Structures are given as structure tokens and as C-alpha cells.
Length: 382
Image 1 (tube, rainbow, N blue to C red):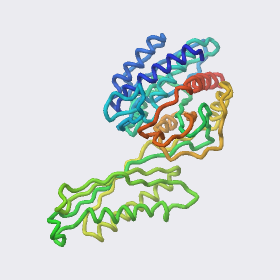
Image 2 (tube, one colour; image 1 turned 30 degrees about the vertical axis):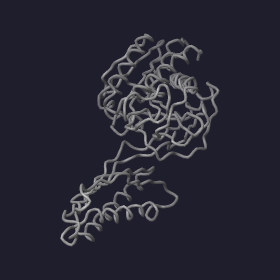
Image 3 (cartoon, rainbow, N blue to C red; image 1 turned 135 degrees about the horizontal axis):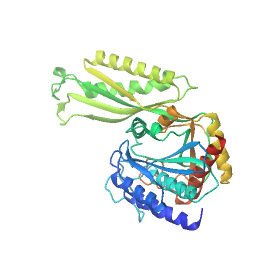
């Protein structure tokens, strides 16, 4: 990559960082991407599955077709970086690096547009709503693979704590399947001075939370992997009234379906027990995400080959993460691989989804070049 292109991508990335948009609201982000694709002379279709965009380049006569994907949405987090290009949108920031993913994919498009050495078709997928709002599912439902019949699909996520520019390629599972857990406890509200006339959902919630935390520690095989985190609790409006309802929300993560099934069963059993014990109604609702991100063997090999082409260090020894990624839904439709590209040193508060997080612009050349090279390798392999 030329210094001029790196500088341009850095400017684009920082613009996106300063103007984040939440899932399902990426109108201006999508318009910005369309503007840059037009500048690069790359044709595209917009409005796919919401604010999604697919740009397409074709070279030569080969029939092979490959997809490259980046996500565009930000998070409802207040930025605390103090950067000159910090978020200008109160309460919203690119705390997961999707600004860097989008800029990197634009860079890959620029590199491939200037490269006459390959033959086939590359589709550049700019996806909205990755942060738990089903953007990949929406794009697939909008006919992504029928309208752009790619044979394979590739993507990456920046990874704080991994040396900058190092590429981690997993053989098999990369990231967990995630689910949203909502538990509603309905009791009987009343005067806090006469608790015997009430059915207290706050007290029931306390016991339920403690019991729930025993599931992973006492019901899951220690050699398996699972997370059940209860993250919010809401109930009551007055300090002298026993509340009528409490709502608890959290997340369930797993790598194996059998583990998920067992945890869901235990959640139901515990909720039933708490309801009987405290005379309340406990209603669990569990909505599972799109699945586990799992690399297919041939495509993981292509990912490593592409890393070699860009002379990036490769790691194959990293354990899968319990974070989720809706790239999994593409992998239900097509073979592919999802890699991590090191963002550099992990700093306090600058973890993924942290208020002081920032994508490392120094890795833009590696990220863009890897995406371009993995596309070329995939086309050549077919």
C-alpha cells in the first residue's frame, strides 16, 4: 500500500470515528461509503438489508466469486478518549473498531481496483447492524447470495491485546454464539412497611441471580466453555414501596449446542423453583443469535496464505473468544474464514466495547492488503 492510500484511509477512518451511528441508523455512514466507492470508480448497490451496501469488481473471464465483509455500526457508549477526532455524537462511539473495518474494506477495494493480476469477481459487503441487531441475517434475507452468488466469504475483526499487524487464524471455532436472556419477575406491590402483604420480586431477583451464577460453575463440564452474565436489573420506583415487577437482562454464550441446551434447561428449572419459593411469577425469555463463528478448513488455509503474502506474523495458538459475531450467519450459507488482526497493546479502558477504545490506524495497510490477498487467493483456488 502506498503512503498516500494509507493517509487517505486514515482520514476516512477518523471521519467515521467522529460520526458514529447506532445499529439500524447507519444512514450517513452508508452515504459516506457510497461517496468513497464512487470516488474509487467501483459500482455498488445500496439499501440491502437496511443500510447495507455491496460493491462489485470483475476482472477477466474467470467465473469464481468471493465476498469480503466489513461492519459499519457503532455502540451506545460515551467516548472517553480525548482524541481530536472523538465522537461528535453524544452517547455513541465506535468502541469496537467497525470504523476501521469499513475503512479497511474500502482500502481493499482500492487495492483490487488498481491490480490487474487477478481474474473473477469480488463483492465488498458493507454490513449494518452487527451489534446484536441481525444485520447479516437481514442482508441474507434481502437476497445477498442470490444477487451476488459468491462462492466463499471472508472477514476480520481487529483484536486489542494481539501484537499490531499479527493475524490470528483459527482452525475451527473462532467466536461464540450469543443469546439474549430476559427474565421478568412479577410479584405483588405494596407498602414497604407491610411486606407480609406483598410478594417481593426484588428479593426473588437476588436469589435468582445467585442461583443463575451456579449454572456454569456447577452444571457445565469444566472442559466445556460457556458464559452466563446477568448485566442489568430494573425494578421499583419508590424507596418505601415493594416493587411489583423486576426485569433482569443478560447474555448467554457457548461454543457447543449441547451446552446451550443444558443451560437453557437449567435456567427454566431455576426460574420455576424461584417462583414456587417466593410466590411470584418468573418468565424467562431466551433469544439466541446466529450461531458459532467456525472457519472451514480450506478457507482457513487461504487466510494463512494471504497473511504470508502480506508478510504478516501468523498465530494459530489463540483460544476462541466468548465474544459473538454475526459473521456466523454468512458462514451458515457459504464456506469462509474470519480472522483477528492485532490492534496492539491492550490498555485499561481501551478494550473492545471500552470507552477509551480506538482502532489503530497503523494496521490499515495490513488489514486492507490481507483482504485483497485473501480474495485473490480464493479466486485462484477456484
